[in-house]
Image (cartoon, rainbow, N blue to C red):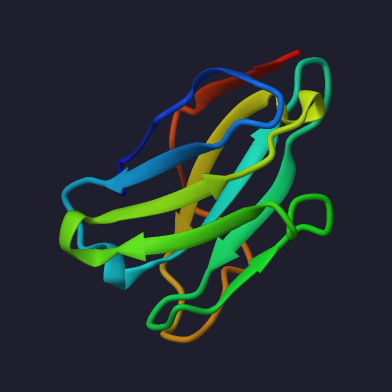
Length: 123
């Protein structure tokens, strides 16, 4: 098992920025490809973005690609989701996930999940 812990959620105003962190515990983050997901209230979980093991290559869902960025801080064993120009419909529980992918590959499925952190955007 690979424990993942999200942090950085909170209540923000529309138009604000927020940075979420996903900390990989007991393992080296460089051994994994990772992803961010979110689940708005009353809706299904959806893909937000992903980070490829062994590179800085990322991909983002069309709905957020102009506003969100994903990065990795290997020294801190953390992946970050930088969210800008937040909108009301960004309100969701945000979760990170990981897989033991080969280097330079995105996850085809996710084996490990965090508990999530709440992001609430108000007007």
